[in-house]
Length: 97
Image (cartoon, rainbow, N blue to C red; front, side, top):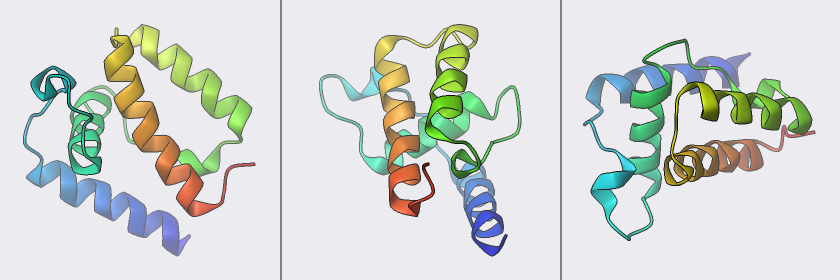
C-alpha cells in the first residue's frame, strides 16, 4: 500500500511539473526516462486516472496496453515509448507475475 501511494504521489507531482513533450520532439533519439514519463503522464492522464502497472499480471497488462494503443491512437513509436517506460516500472518493482 505504501509503495502504491508513493508511486501515485510521484505521478501527481510529476504531472504538475511536466512539460508537454512528445516522441515526435525527440527526432531519432531514444527518449530518456524523464521524457518517457512526461509523455506517459501527458497522454494517458488526459482521459483517465493513472493505473498502477504493478497491480496487473503480464497477460492482463499486455492486453490493456494493446487496447489503449488503439483507443488513444498511439503511433508505434509513441506506444514503444510509453510501454517501455511502464515495463521498466514493472520490472524494477518485481511485481510482474
